[in-house]
Length: 149
Image (cartoon, rainbow, N blue to C red; front, side):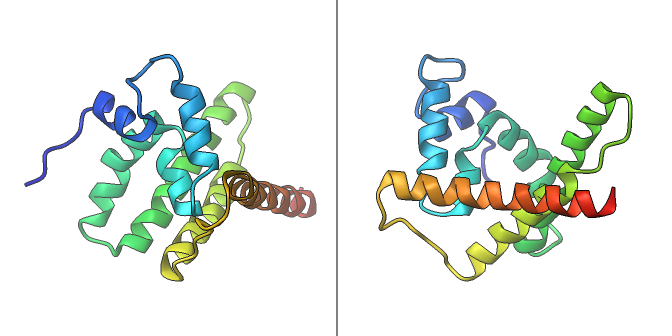
């Protein structure tokens, strides 16, 4: 049986520094943006949120579902929780993040399936590709939203 990492250990593993340490945000941005693939981007992005999603959504789902479905559903849950938080703040129902995160989850799944990597490029190109993927899916969501609202 595997030992579960504590939040502190998980953040240190992802950021290279302790939770709340100086440089934590810089390390997270550098490691995530400079990731050699979109799935790896998400391993470094927001490690505190990632820790809880992994522990409470991904791992339980992965016990009885194929990994790719567990990944996709984890993205949907994350999006739904973002929608819920924004809905609470705005005092009106929001359904934006769930489909957007779903799109990004599909890209993660496809990237894993087809072993898509841009690790041979330098950091600026890798960061541009990761930002482009996020920006393109965000733009697509705004376009879809403009059609239906």
